[in-house]
Image (cartoon, rainbow, N blue to C red; front, side):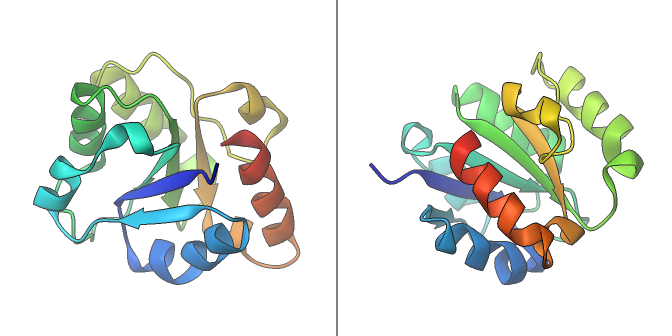
Length: 144
């Protein structure tokens, strides 16, 4: 069975750089173009949800609002947060977003040894550049 990843809060970085990597890895990509499309997607069919931490997205909900929606829809897949900056610069925000929205989980840097045991993780733009891209792709295949 092919695993699917929901681009729950897309950003050009995700669409342009990450989508090809996910497709290469064999994932079915489910994208949304606005808030209504996100609210109407069938969550049970998604193995993971990818949430951009960027300010701009066609989904106008903030990352915490997307997390609240996923929680309300009883999403039980992996959460992948994505951004352009290193993990250390967003770690505090991730912890705050997860705590405020009732997700009692950790979100380490995605390819860290600790991430394999977690339900969430953070991927940064440099994780998608060679030579790290293959490691990132292989990690996602085994993790999701």
